[in-house]
Amino acid sequence: MKRLLITGAAGGVGKVMRTRLAHMAETVRLSDIAPMDPAGPNEEVVQCDLADAAAVMDLVDGCDGIVHLGGVSVERPFAQILKGNIEGVYNLYEAARAHGMPRIVFASSNHVVGFHRQDSHLQATDPVMPDGLYGVSKCFGEAMASMYHSKFGQETAIVRIGSCFPKPVNHRMLGTWMSYDDFVSMIEAIFRAPMLGCPIIWGISNNDVTWWDNSAARYLGWRPKDNSETYRAELDAAGPPPPVDDPASVYQGGAFTQDPILKE
Image (cartoon, rainbow, N blue to C red; front, side):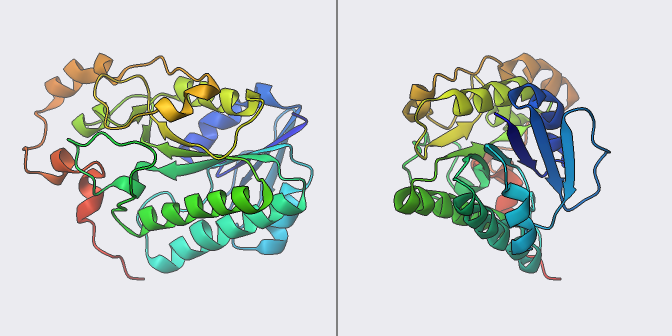
């Protein structure tokens, strides 16, 4: 690609992808509402509020691909989620439609299915059961991606990220962990595919513990390699798993299922 846009580039995963995806384009355009490190070689840094439609229109101009990590990434009051995750997603898709419909990787979340139990094994076609306002906003983003694909042909990979960290930090993450290496290889496969469509991809590594079936996305050729089981002994040594009746052991969304609706 000539120019790849990464939104949310000041966030935890965004900072990693800033470096790890640099080989995918001649120029990487980095965006966030928060301050970012200065631009390095072959980088452009653009501070942008996703709720500002005109700014997002300019942001997407000239981009061949988009990795959309931007927006609110945890449970927050509705007014904050509305701006970043609902208005922001609409603005992004309208900007993409106006600028040639570059392929999009949309960072959705496991929290769209958070109230499914951990003893379930889900297909991408199973009903959503969001566990909070954040999860609801990601359901909205998935619906926008689907509608723009059906109506206009905009291609999007909807990636329901489990837990993308250097390693799992609790026992629940044995079922949700995705390594940085596996996320990078997924993004490479998404942009390499001759035809993408609008698939839902479960964002997990090749873990022994799994609640999600990724067989519908195998046509992309992505095969994750890392396994959370590598870290089980380390987690067990740090402390026992939560009780069997704890939300972290019952629901796929874990403790998010018990979070209150936050007010301003």
